[in-house]
Amino acid sequence: MSRPVSPRPFRFGVNLMTSAPAEEWRAKCRRAEELGYDVILVPDHLGMPAPFPALVAAAEATQRPRLGTFVLNAGFWNPALLAREVATTDALTGGRLELGLGTGYVKAEHDTAGLPWLSPGERVDHLRRTIEELYRLLASEEHQPQPVQKPRVPLLVGGNGDRVLRLTAEHADIAAFTGARSVRGDSTGKLEVMLGGELQERVGLYLDLAAAAGREEPESAELNLLIQFVLDTDDREAAVQPLMERVPYLTPDQVLELPIGLIGTVEEMTAQVLAQRERYGFTYLTVLEPSMEAFAPVMARLRGK
Image (cartoon, rainbow, N blue to C red):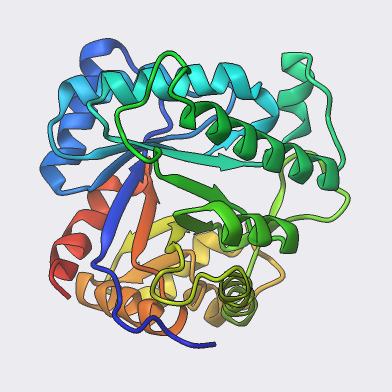
């Protein structure tokens, strides 16, 4: 797999998943900005904050970070209604929106919402239709409201499957990899982690598809990785033990090498991120809200590298 000719500068996002009253939410967003995060993100799961109003509130509380959905479940959205939400949110955030979209993977959420649960292939088809119709609508000068960003709001597509990667290669500005896959035949949202070799194969396939679509490096999409856990410790072997019950099919050494986790001192975790950029090309890293503080010193070390 070829590497980017000139790696993009690092960007760092934090996915805020916990609802909070107005002032607490604003304080959390201000803290993310203070720590140096480049992007404040919100997921799209029932039981978590509604993404668009949460991002508007984040914009009111901050000045510098961009604001993104990570990621919208396309099955929840009608393209015409989504176009209205995107354009309004981009306007109210001063053109700071980054739109993240995915297929959705939790059947129970669709059941609760009274929405049909489609097959994997049908969910990808719906994601494609959503993207194509969304940007057709937003490109029209007659569409109201209008987004601030031109020619369009940047698009992130999340997913690892062949057809999603092809869609990403054709349309996305940011290719987001989870480092995990849905368990075949399971509709509860259960995921299995990917080892480094499998993730490298997925990134390589994306780059091949991007090249086939006429997007040679470095014009292909920015590569994003979701980091699931950050453990600041000077004893990596001891720190990994509580994680073993979640992944009983892996050895401790395999867990220590997982791309989706950072375990060690700040210096060791910084070295892990630099090694992953070299191996995979990831320059945009997202951490989950519980890791926001722990990752901040690593983020500071990586600035300018």
